[in-house]
Image (cartoon, rainbow, N blue to C red; front, side):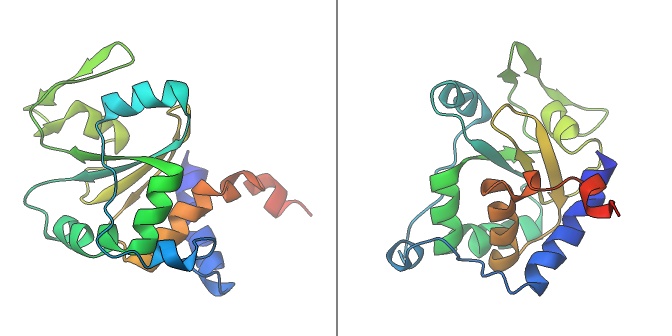
Length: 180
């Protein structure tokens, strides 16, 4: 897991250095649609939909008091290219890290815990590193790809989305990169 967390910034920098365009693969008419919105659904809805049509999952872990979370809502999550790519390739979830409602997933009920001042599911997804906003990427089987902490502007966010969405993370392992 540590290798994946360490590799992500390196891979993002490689994509940026290569001149990878952040709206690559999105038709101009789709990328320019104004007013389009991300189809946010609950994690429970994702579990049901994923049985019929598997997709990767992107989870925005936020809090109501987080200024950078609000900035991502207003800029990154309204960017037409980001909206189009997420809606086509992912199931999108907003998870209030301090939400009080229980969430049942795969037979386990996650609840808010006073001792963490956070929801158990947020603690699990963020691996105890409670930083907001954090975007969590899961594969089609709910396996962790990686959590990415911090504010991301639309171009950077789109590069990470396409990195996982287009399965670039499967192209080579760290061992294959470092093999001589």
